[in-house]
Image (cartoon, rainbow, N blue to C red; front, side, top):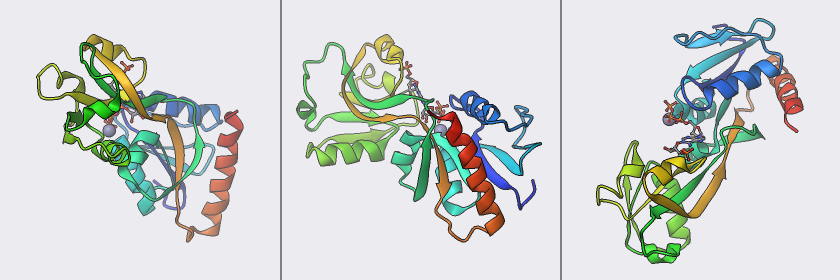
Length: 213
Ligand code: PRT
Ligand code: ZN
């Protein structure tokens, strides 16, 4: 990896990986990506593409370990890192939503007072209910949130929803959307970037913006 090259982090292996790679390729960047690789050097631009876990991307961008990143707004909202949102990329579209069992008597969010809510997004959940002034008990799990109502430990869940199929399969339904999300290009706020890198970054961002209508 050449240190004077720009660095852009994308998800290594997940829902955003293929779309992020297609997006970069459609901007004209040429690079090889092998599943086992940790980074790829572009052949026709001084850029290194770094493959990491999506949750780490805001941190790497904020600290300047990488110059740019492609990540879901949901991760940004949850992590609260100080980064610049450059452009929304129109993929990875989903929403963070509150869901309850299909047979629940609850009709509106206000009725969730003192409810047990399981989520992998505790910060976004806490912020939402605090703003609404509804006291709830928020419990954090690292995955498979949809199972918690069936286990009898949750009255509601807060999770990402795309097609809604996972909720339907688990006899759950959305009662409220907390926010919409999609993949977005982010950059650090580091103004001490060397002039050469700044120019490269502007060139690259211009290329990317052309692809977004
Ligand atoms: O390993 P790593 O930490 O990098 O990946 P990850 O497992 O944390 O994330 P991953 O690959 O699942 O998702 C990456 C990003 O894709 C998320 O941060 C979102 O920005 C975006 N995204 C878009 C989604 C979904 N749609 C989505 N549907 N992320 C997750 N889901 C899950 C959701 O949590 C639920 O389990 O899919 C299920 C619901 O999908 P539907 O279609 O049945 O509604
Ligand atoms: Zn993740």
